[in-house]
Structure formats: structure tokens, C-alpha cells
Length: 201
Length: 209
Picture 1 (cartoon, rainbow over the protein chains, first blue to last red):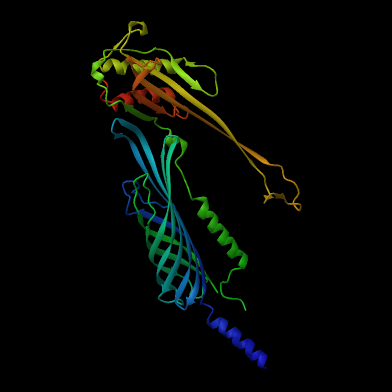
Picture 2: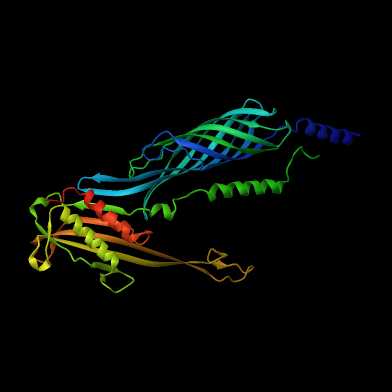
């Protein structure tokens, strides 16, 4: 009898708390636009991804890892650049390949409803590869820096006990990575992520 | 007891693998060769100590370009391309007020143009399942995979030399340099080279009487 009661209680507890989760896996597309170095690249880019993993620290507080990649691009039409007695005429394809890995903490306003707003902060490492393509030639500079990413977003579940949710988030990225060769300073971007998450327990 | 909407663990693994694959598959897109090779790059530099107004005559062969190549032994490049380029060089020099003369008539300036063609073949050898210096006995021996890459590039180099200044080693002073590339990758090497020659003079306004 004691065993039956125990099994019943365990089963009940799982049904009652089935909508809670303690792990989150997510994948989203990232649309970004630069706020600095705009003379190098000033276009909105949809070439970005984010992979996220979170573990529950407390009921509304989660921490984990974000891996991100985005590519900012801009075409500079053919023009002549002069430097003293020298001059070069070419068109330029300016590319910034942006990799990030952050330790991120998110605070959720709730974790049991269909709509779950959250705000978070990520801190980690940034690796930027600046490539300038012109004809068959390339100028290239790689740089490491610190990455800081505040973000706000929502999870939206179609049902309250669903283990899937849509995700939308806004984020601001500051990377201290620079390039002296290309005269580029720290990079800051804003972006919007749209994707989905698996809520696991 | 099953959890609501719970997916099988393998699905979760596939999801993670697909996410990471997508993440890295799209990591570093680059412009296409077609986009990059629409126009030739034109780079020029002149000697700031020279007054180009001090020269009157120049000489250039009108149907021949020099050729420096690691794939052929010829040192001269003949044909339509050479004619188009040298004629265009002449028309630009003429328009700047200089007079073309035969080489035997002691010109002030010598205009030389040559193509540097560099052809390289690279090979890499990969050994599948070759770990830490040992072949895995379980999987047996794997033949290495050889990948071959070819690269071919060509630059048109134009130099203006002062024939009035000769060193003791019989060398002349180069007062203007121009590099035009890449003519091998260009879909229209002749047409684009002619445009590039015009551009080289446009961006060097100091050349002229």
C-alpha cells in the first residue's frame, strides 16, 4: 500500500509540474546591424545564427552558454583611393565574420505560462575576422576581444505544457575586438533573433 | 510516466547536431568569383621628385608585351591583346602631350609593359582514420586522399622609365609604376585591360606636358 501511494504521488507530481523545465536548448536566426565601424560595413545582415543552452539555477533564473555567428557585409562600388603619390582603383567587398561565445544568465518573469518574457546578460569572448575582398586579392585581420550582450526576449508556447516554444529576442552586442590594420575600432551591433527552443526537464 | 509533448532523446540530439551544423555551415560566406572579377584592380605610384613636364618624347613597341611566366618559356606576348594594350598606352601618352618616336631616336621616356603570369599547383594529402600516428587496426588500412588545387594569376605591369638617367650598371630610373590585375580571372581580359590602362592615366594626373 505504501508503495502504491508513493507511485501515485510521484505520478501526480509529474503531471502537476509537467510544464516546468530546467534545461533550455534553442536555435535562432539573428538579424543584425552595426552601430560602429559603419564606414566599413553599414548594412543589415540576416546571416546570423545563435545556439543557446540554459540550465535552471532557480525557478526563474537560468544560466548557460550562447554560441553565435553572424556575417556583416557591404559592397563598396569601384572608386579610387589615393595615398600620397600612390592610388588604387577597385571595388571592395567588406566582410566581418563575427563569432561569439558567452556565459549568459536570463531572468524569466514566469516559467509556467504560454508567454514567458525574460531579460538577460551574456559575457564572454568575441572573435572577429575582417576580410576585405577586391578582385582576386584579400586583406585580412583577425581580432579577439571581450563580448558583452544584454538582451530581452520572449518564449511563446502554443500550449502551456508544450516542450517547444517560439522565441524572439532583441540584443545589443559590444565587442572590444579591433583591427589596427584596417583602422577599425570596437564593434557594437544590435540584433533581433527569431527561432525556437526546446524546454527540457 | 511520459512527459507531455516530450520528444525522444535522439530527436534532441539530431536537433543539436542540425543546429550546430547550420551554425558552422554558414560561418564564412564570401563574394563569388563572378562578382569579384567584374573589373580589374588598378594600382599606380609615381616618383614625387620628378617633374613630368620636362619630358618630350617616348617610345613603346606597338604590338608586343613582355612576358614573365613560370608556365611557358616565351618572353614576349604577341597577338591582339598586346596590340590593344600598347595602342591604348600610346593614345594616352599622346593625349598627355608626349611624342612617340622610334627607340633608335633617343626618346626621353621608355614605356614598358609586360604580363607576369604565375601558375601554381598545390596538392594536399589526407589520411582518413589516421589518428595520432597510428592506423586503426579495427578499420584497416585506408588509402590517402590527394586533393589538387590549381591557381593561375596574371598581372599587367606598366612602367615609365627615364631614359635620360642611366646608372653605371646600365639601369634606368622608374618614375611611374602601374599594376593591373587579375587579367587571367577576368571574363574580358582585353576590354577590361584597355579600360584599366585609361584608369591608370586618369588616376595619375601628374603625367603630362
